[in-house]
Length: 378
Ligand SMILES: C=CCOC(=O)Nc1nc2cc3[nH]c(NC)nc3cc2c(=O)[nH]1
Ligand SMILES: [Zn+2]
Image 1 (tube, rainbow, N blue to C red):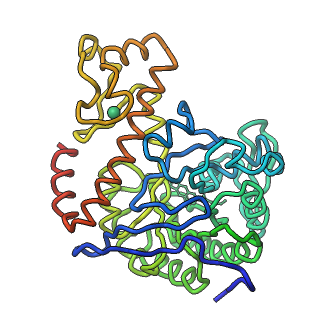
Image 2: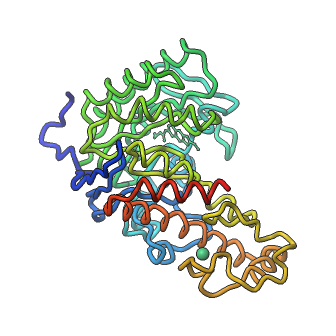
Image 3: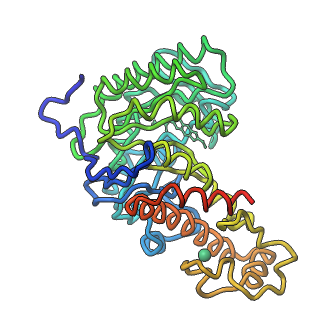
């Protein structure tokens, strides 16, 4: 294994992984320099050092524990050295909870126009000014050390979907070599480096990727290359192949997932951490998430609906405002409208993971899952 000399390498210590009586679901506690956090957890995405339309105070109030920021975006603008000079990302954005940085460039890397990947790294075109940029494990890790997140991600390639077996194999092997280079470049103590399991939609490549990365001994593991357009059953099959190979006493982070039905299935397989832009993105076009599915509050049907989005919801929007009012704001292009739908959607997912944790601790996760799926998919 690759142990750091004198390096406290396991920051995200994992304890209390409470297993409920069903395969992999577990409730744990994640230790970081900015606190100890409960899992399963949803992590709001703050791509450019802000979770769009909400303040750090509101995030804290709704129970956010760890939030995401994107290395690629902050590297291009304002630059990660500048953030380091500002005192690091926590100071820069005034967030004293946990921060995890991922690349945020996976759209660019796997879908971008100029995507040239070699053993050295990935060349791509900046979405800001079209300039040619280059990222390698060393550059990505240095950028993340500058940002100062509590958890950072190894540099990887998110394999596009669909992909030929041969390409997926070569890319996955390269991602493992990049993970090793990421480890060697990671010299900042007090920061946990997670590896990212790849393997496309191929069971054998997923198992090889997981086993290779586990033998490199990371404090936590992301599961990448999923939620990239594949059918949900394929995603679940990849989880079934991968998660059992990962150490039970370390966190598992399913990248870019997702909707509540995906979260409850992934928790069943033993996933602990999630991130997704979906709740904040759909909020901005007036869609609210509820336990029965989506509610497009902008629709005319809600013009005179004086009930809250969800009368059982404890969020600031549902406690104080009606659907009619929020619809009015959205139709009038009022910024406050977007803020209210965003606050509701983030609260909904944060509360949903809290409810799953409670169900696991009380050993009733299975029935929780059944009841939820029956109502949500109706
Ligand atoms: C600095 C280096 C850190 O690199 C990464 O963050 N890499 C990475 N990010 C992903 C993000 C995803 N979002 C979705 N669905 C919405 N699927 C995703 C898959 C990946 C992935 O395989 N890798
Ligand atoms: Zn609400």
